[in-house]
Amino acid sequence: MNRGVRTLTRNLTGAAIRVVRPSSLLLVPVPEAETALRTWRGEKMLPGGVPAHVTVMYPFLPARAIDDRAEAQLARIAASVPPFDFRLTEVGRFPGVLYLRPVPGEPFADLVDLVMRQWPGYEPYEGRFAEFVPHVTMAEDDSVHEDTERLRPLLPIACQAREVTLMTESARGWHTRSRFPLCGTA
Image (cartoon, rainbow, N blue to C red; front, side, top):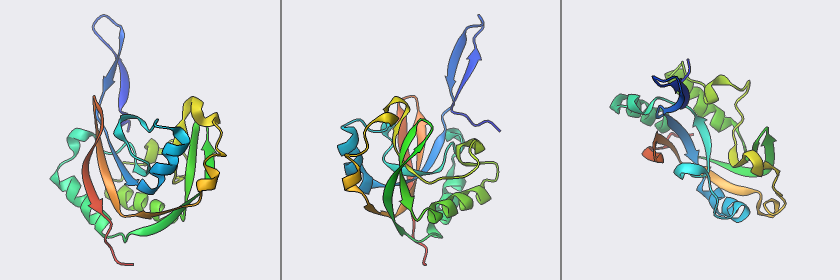
């Protein structure tokens, strides 16, 4: 099932046009990483208002499909998970992506599993990757070759996952729709 945010189609004259189908994104914000990332990247942050984060599910539901029932299900999932501590310990690379690795990563994988059980047709990144690797994106595309040595003295960064945030996309970028506190008991 393709839930891609952007697709190419043809208009009546046959010219290709880009159609935006607003999507949503589930993430765990990592505000503790903002200062280090801003120091390393300068003021250049992720596009469209997305904070430093670990992705739980992208793409998630189409923005128009999010209703009170979906939000109640997300609230129940988040309420079942206790807040947890993690550290950003090292710089990693995917093709075209530079990232910080959270340790331990298992609590993020557990959140992904809970979401996938509730919405079985959804997988992180539409299942394009064989394995879910929790990460905080530092840079994408051409900037992945930038020097990371300036960031290493700032590591490790102690963090705590406190909530899952639901963001929706519009023509003007990403917007926070709801925040769901992690409040389960360990």
